[in-house]
Length: 199
Image (cartoon, rainbow, N blue to C red; front, side, top):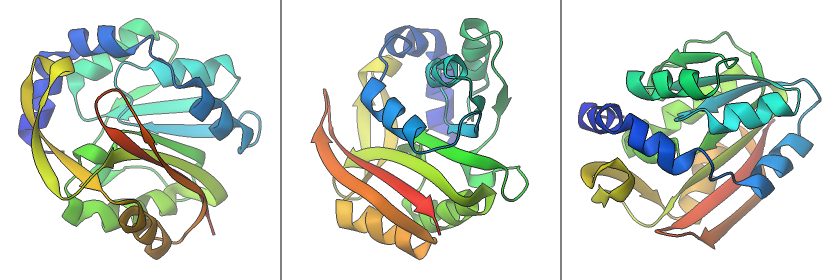
């Protein structure tokens, strides 16, 4: 994630958290939970307001939420006081190999540079346990674009867009087996969702 994007999340952290905290993707969350063992250790990449960490806690899982924005982490701690949150970049994940049963990456990879994507997915693969599950959702499209983001006070931020086959190939090259891959329309963008398993 570039510095300007982090600044935008820092500047509008409370507003963004207010926008997103109640907007739960229940179907995707429940499907992810159905694929992992009970009491699993979960990593929520770019956890934002902590909304999904709270959902995982409610299901008896053991989540850790990370985000590159210090102010977003502060908002998460405020809203989910019993959550475990750390400031960390997805480009430099500081966890031991095979630490997690599942990794939840809802709109997390959208803010990383495309040139770093293969390395990021390989790093994610390393910290997943054998047959660990990952869910990823990214914006559907081409290349990297500067967008005006309403939830961040109309800040101009750089976002990576993907074609479905492009993302699937990145996953396969990083050592994942794709369980399900589909594109669906959202409020502002179309989204590619992938459920995959570490081989």
